[in-house]
Amino acid sequence: MADKKLHALLVCTHPTQYGSPMWRLMAQRADLEILVAYCSLEGAQAHVDPGFGVEVAWDIPLLDKYPWVRLRNISLRPVIGKFLGLINPGIWRIIRAGKFDAVVMFTGYICATFWIALAAAKLSGVPILFGTDAHDVSPRDNRSWKTKIKKYLWPKLFRLADVVIAPSTGTVALMRSLNIPPERVVLMPYVVHNEWWIDQAARVDRAAVRGDWNIPAEAPVVLFCAKLQPWKRPQDLLRAFASANVPGSYLIYAGDGPMRSELEAQAKTLGISAQTRFLGFVNQSGLPRVYCGSDLLILPSEYEPFGVVVNEMMLCGHGAIVSDHVGAKFDLIKHGETGFVYPCGNIDVLAKLLQVTLSHPEVLRRYGEASKRCIAEWSPRAYVDSVARGIERALDLRKSPASEA
Image (cartoon, rainbow, N blue to C red; front, side):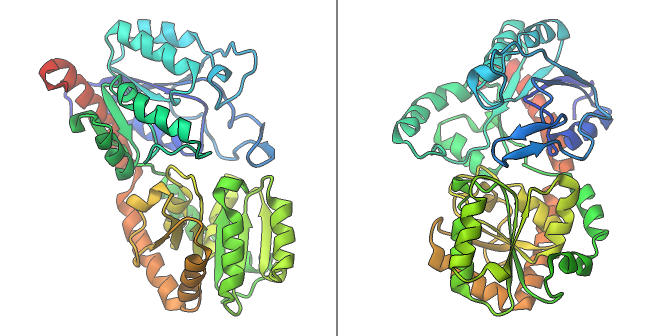
């Protein structure tokens, strides 16, 4: 750890239920002084989430106990996820006048503000850290031309960073495949607020949750917790659950989105509507009840850079089955211990895994115990330590130009 306090600017698109607890922990460290610059306050303020299809405002504090500023957005059509949706020129002045040791970008490069911040950091001689949560170059829509562009541009893009942030070992491997020097890549684990989840889980009355769902206390329950979007492939789980046909089992969908009515109709067609519950959108404070009331999480996504629902389920004492396109498979899913990884879209394999797990309560308990041990190491402390380590690495590399590839 450095002898002097490190001053870091964290540039974020908007407050999130995952990021804010990390910023609080950083603000408590004696060796770090941070300022969080938000391009938007979406999330802390109510907005219509196009993925959920409902108005969302997270019901936990997102803006307290750490220093932050809101950047004015001059975009004509403000929106997160579009290049011209976030244009925050004020970031230029903050970086140029701030005397920071490093700028850490959490905006993603498909954002005008990212490039304003990058230019300001380069001109100011301030090390800059940024990355991606991807673990391969495949885009969400699987268009081949996008893959070709990424293969060409990404090696050049990530060499602009003094240090590349990698939230999983899958991302670390991706950076190596792009010939980014290993000393310029730091694993910053994709984590949630472990202590909060453990505390909330301990307060849940599982029997009461089952009663609210009208599900027997001892019934095996499978959970899908995500937006009901095509790339999440919720229909795969519906079909696999029907095919597995485990007596007395139930299926829970926590989340909303454009596929909900289609899934409800399919459940009737498959003859499993009586065993299926659609909870709709569940806010953050209600999620521990959902996880603790279930026994096994399934994440069948065809595009999932990480999947922090896996973290959350493990902290609530249960295992997970994920497709091989889910980034959490690299660090959290230990095959046959904390859960299973199966080929994305292979409903027959998923159905067999459901049969094996749901028919054997002792298997579910074993996954849960192993999951709690695994997730204990994938922690906020490890994340905050890695941020400090990444900043120190960037400063050291600036002192040693010979280390550049």
